[in-house]
Image 1 (cartoon, one colour):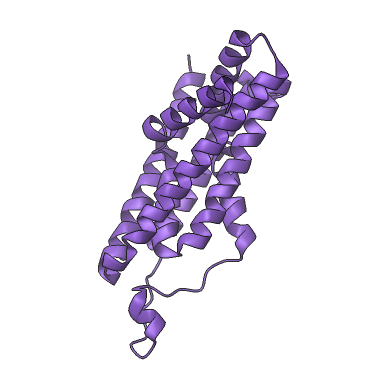
Image 2 (cartoon, rainbow, N blue to C red):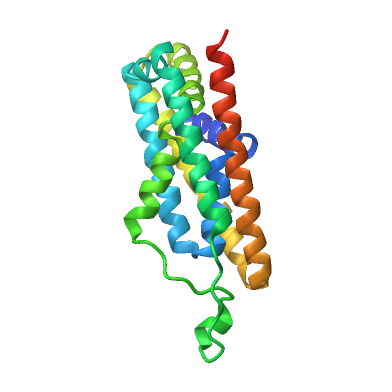
Amino acid sequence: MSAVFFEGIILGLTLATFFGFGPAFFALVQTSIHRGFGPAVLLAIGIFFNDVLMVVLCLMGAVQIVTAPSNYLWFGISSGVILIIFGLVTFSRKVSEPNENSEEDMKLPVKVKGPRWFTYIAKGFFMNIVNPFVWIFWVGVVVGISARMGGDETRLTSFFSGTLITVLLCDLLKAYGAYSIKRFFTQKMIGLLNKIAGIGLIIFGLFLIGKVIFDNSF
């Protein structure tokens, strides 16, 4: 394992530990408990694809389109509205009663029919795609690392491969951890978790809208 790849792993662990508890985290844990580990994996893959696209576009310079002052407000409000919608849907989601005659339901306290697989990937992907703060964050990281490595494409590819793979693995661990404790959750507790996750997403959405409006006013 190259030293550059290892440096990328360190950054990935830092991101997952100190910056990995935003809207995507709420969605990831809630999906894992409510829908199962498989859907949470798909959601994590969608988030991973989103991060890969952002890094690539930052390296290409296309990110200037998103972070331009004329587009910043629109992207911020759009992202906030999307998070609020996700939050409202999550908050109002009903937990179905398990079938007492079903052995499978005895193992899983909640049994629901979920969306198709690509819906979870799309949700994970679009969770951050219109969030200008995520773009600005990746711009700072990419610019800083690119300057330090002198724009060496091979080293940059190795570095960000380590970063993104590590973030994906950490997301999968979070999803698995949430899924592992699912058996200890009653129907009422899962319903409460839905409301907490929904409120969290709504708060993030309102904060994002307020922040971009405030920033655009000065």
